[in-house]
Length: 305
Image 1 (cartoon, rainbow, N blue to C red):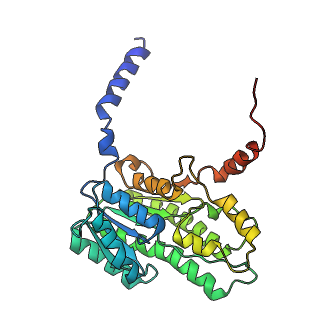
Image 2 (spheres, rainbow, N blue to C red):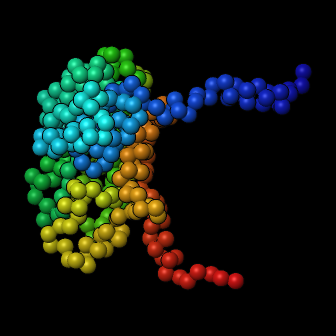
Image 3 (cartoon, rainbow, N blue to C red):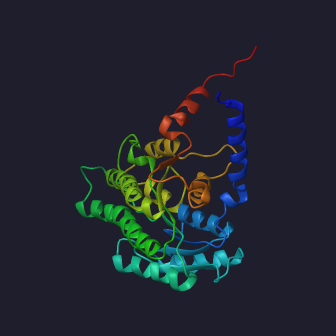
């Protein structure tokens, strides 16, 4: 009996139509419970905001009670009340704080479906001047904090049979030597560790239906970045060079921090159900020198007939 390729293809196409879930469902987090660390500023705040917009209940975690005290009212003014979002003071590098964070989310909202680790610290210092204690501080917060979050959130998800989403915010600094004049060996090392941690955690947790991925942005304009990039000892010329290389602006004027937040949001939705162990690069082409290429071609006059 001859095989009918067209008939087989017709059946396959019909099956695709039947199993295709509505896009609004694929990108929805309605009714889910999310924890976002480092969420009282910058990227973490934008991720929390997008999750709230998507219908999730959110626990905002941050190390500063002062920031928490003004972050929640700002969200309340935007229409997100205490029944949707709370603040939990958390040092991500302290295990007792992470245990308390998980307990708070469970007691307040009754579940944890999404965990986004956006908490991170950094500072400026060349490797030959970098104090060992500062290296340990950055690595402890950025890697140990990510580890403790995965440990306690995944333990909760496993015990409650939740097929959740864990997203770690990494950085293209893990493989890109920037700025060209150095100054971030502790930060770059820590983000390389975050990438490896995401991959290893994905291996171990996939059998429980828990997806673990990392999102790696490039340079973003946030309050924390501005404070650390304009480092002592850096000439004005070098500061300008730094910003020219790292600050990726969208043509429409949108700050890239929100673009990255939307990527992290998408990783928290059913859209990413088949993804785990991935390092999703969201750096506007920095990793492929597209920013430098664009700057170079703009030096040439437009070609006309």
